[in-house]
Image (cartoon, rainbow, N blue to C red; front, side):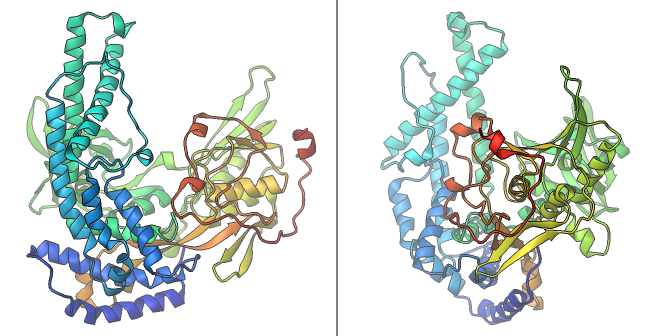
Length: 603
């Protein structure tokens, strides 16, 4: 996932042009705080930095009015997907920007985001009052009413009365669910046969819980900054090219890197936001916090200090902002002010370390069929992870190919009748590891083809001279198996190497992305005050099976269909906005594997 030299030079030119652009930026339309002005300048900088590389997108889409309309549609969905905040006339107020996003990006003067931020703030205040008013009175569950849960089937409300009614029905539905759950938790065999007094008490408790839930929701929304609105705007612009071209704000970029390498630098604890406080859910065994020994589950973190610096109060802070304060470089100290039931507040010093997220790595086991007593190897690959940063720095980064290989080597000691490779819910990862893992079962030969927007194709080969496992195998997939998972499943199916089992189709993401660190474009010192900028994840290629078929849009169709609950929901590339179409190219010559007779299988 490296940026090409040509793209990088274009970014550098754009950064130099920004020096002039930032100094001549028009004055804001209304009075702004210093933080808001910084956000405006940062957004202006980002539009310049983003608009150059996206012109190298696989689709070749121009930045024009048509793209602007697509971006506007996505932006409104992100702003109020449930259609419970904005009124129809408020959406119409924003519609004047429908054909202007391309012009805003080109000029660097973004007006839609701050305008929408003001509208959304007013609509949130209105909605909060509606929720409180509706939940003041008890609901009657004796009247049959229809609740539409699919926002796609709804229009924006035209009047406040219509909006109030939408909220009433929604809150009644949510209260009913809580009500039934509370009765079930109380071990009532039949919710319809409980006493009137208990029904009344339970209905009140259910309403209180729903109100608490929505108070937390509105508090989270109020904490959104102007920069959050700019980030939403830039994401809508990026995703108008295709669903997988996205602007990644700094926190999203960090989370992506963590998911790819399966580790982070911090204290080693899971946190959540609860009633305005940051609460410890669990401490990871063997982590820095666990070794220090004082931090426990259910502790409340009141403040965070970096070493001996002054502490920062994290009460009412967004969870992601508090986490950003607690994470940090290995070897540095963070001091947590803790409140614990029955104990006076105290401070815990923790020296940060690398936290290994074990659930993100390959898992394997040997299972025995109780009837036949046959033994089968089982390998679960949650993602095709690879520690790119360690590898770039000359180290040996952990990767999914090596971990699968190690699992297969361990299985050699077992007398196995077959192997199950579980790719369910695997959303993809590194292309390198898709080729590497497939090669463990195929040996030398072509695995996948890639083609760029200019029509240039390339075949990616496995160079494994030794096959790690020769026996029969089954690959499990579902509609959440995507990208690199589909490369592996598609290759093993095309070769006849494995039987693919799952629901009707895999996700259908047949595109390749590169990750561009936007900070690399900031060569001039006066721009570095706006770092970090985050990253752009951009689609530059499509991949094709050795058969020539793309997995894009259609996915991989299993040999044996095992329906699951997801078949009743719209999961997959075909349901995403602006997804690229399916197509095919020439097949590449490859050998057939003798273990699978599909003629017999499909008879």
